[in-house]
Image (cartoon, rainbow, N blue to C red; front, top):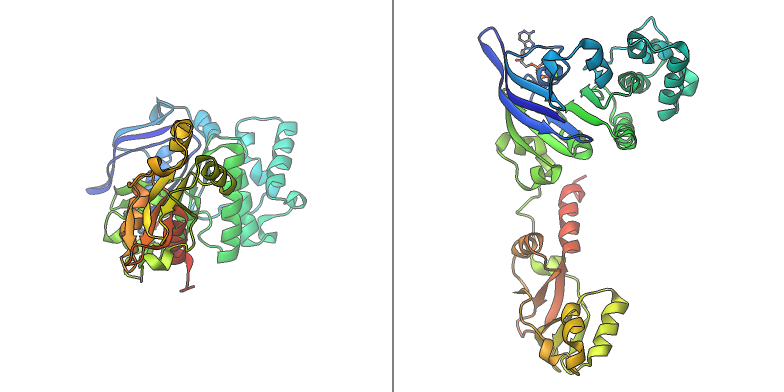
Length: 370
Ligand SMILES: Nc1ncnc2c1ncn2[C@@H]1O[C@H](COP(=O)(O)OP(=O)(O)OP(=O)(O)O)[C@@H](O)[C@H]1O
Ligand SMILES: [Mg+2]
């Protein structure tokens, strides 16, 4: 666990970090994001003591980093700097072994680490190559491996993929996410690219002028951007509330309905067969009457013959032509499985489910414009 407690850092009379407070849990992938100059690199470097802070405390597993010894910190925290920073006169293997050598691991251990690291990104054949013989993406991979070499539980990465083309970046993002999950690392990853943060982060910390503007999951950012700057960063990812969103645009037609006179066993069997846990009940003219739940059938099924006594009128109904937004909000904020959409004559038009909500969000996020 990494804890920032009232961390302040200034250069001269310019305050760079204002009273930063946050906690990062073990195994989390955290993205620090914000405009150039907002203090991301400064925050990152204060964790491994490359930059000393003026006041406040940074604790790792409860221990103050300013009191830790350097070798201990190097073992504990891997670091990928903002430029790739491979040593040009060292081979790939030697680059990977920098920290293990500093920590005085023997030759055999260093060799094993190199093999294992290169294996992670399928670059075993490059051990003896020099950085200049590698592509940008390959160099970046080695930079990441070098940070992982001493098996640190925490890895700090400062815009590691910033200089790469979009496809290579995409591959490396997948790889790093994979490695993080496989090796269960805590990663603090600086980026100014919201796509990258949304893709990688368990938690995003959004900074502006040395302060945290918002901290939360990608989901929370998308749903509730804290201010205009965050909204600007999210850009096209924000769900457009103005696109046409009538209930009929999202409903599934032909939901399973039953008549009120149906027998208990028949209905229970139907629910089991269709893997649903409630049924919509209609009259002979197909007007909506109510719903029956599997829970009630199990509870009272022995005491009644038909579903009629078990019909409830608690399901949310809406009329064709209504805005879908309210239904979505209702589904997201309750345990309800669906909202029932009715024609003006009260017959069933369809249902909106949580899946409809997901599909609509997906369409807004990735749909038509790209
Ligand atoms: N050694 C220094 N002396 C004086 N000011 C500094 C020093 N290092 C950083 N700063 C200032 O601190 C602020 C934060 O810098 P930092 O490098 O943390 O920003 P950043 O968010 O990482 O930006 P970028 O996205 O451009 O990398 C900037 O205004 C920068 O000019
Ligand atoms: Mg920076």
